[in-house]
Length: 281
Image 1 (spheres, one colour):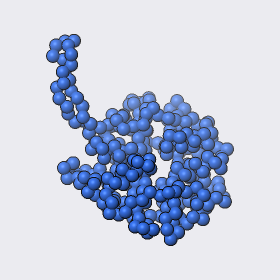
Image 2: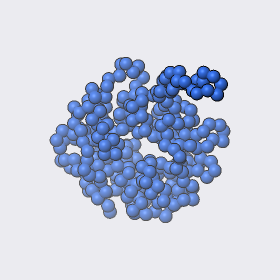
Image 3: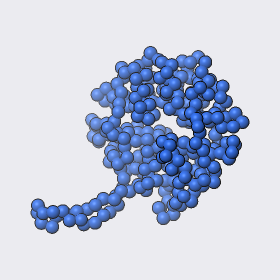
Image 4: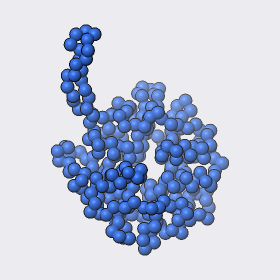
């Protein structure tokens, strides 16, 4: 049986509890990662993710009361109770732990930080071990949608109400076109940059058919279509699960909507973890 040490990610990028959030964010952007271990030497203190940054820094208070991110210590936003695994832990047990605790990563720890195993690592492993199943055999029928015109704050509210970190964006109407996807990771970094608003230039013509003249610039609320990933990549129910998993890896997605004319559900990381926790017996 495969042990987690064989698939874990190394090196592990880390920050100290006293480092500021701006440094953590810059490290994530520089290395293309979504989580950092919080450590003092070899001692594990916590973990901080893009979702932590988005959820903790985008609060309801007015902007003038928000502290700049270079003045907020990482320890204020990090998750302190980190679930760890030993390097000899079996993959099926890792998958079960992720599902049971609703987490996307586990730190591999044995008197020192040895590595980290993420959902991405687990999906990659799934593509290597193989499965005869089709997408329709593994998909979840629950999928949450928002309109492309919903504000960012409304999108966040919908995610919280439905305990999800991703939504499909529709074009509106009863027979909606599916036009994009938004994840909480996207919102975390987008709202840090733009504080939920975007500048719009207003112009008018002095005479009919004449040149446009700048009237001014105003801030308007950002909406779903401003941050969504588009065009939407989807999969059909009869597609091979392995092919769908490879598509997820290529695009760094946690899920793919299952569309056969209409939206039937989603093929997601949780489906793969469930299979790994049960089929690897």
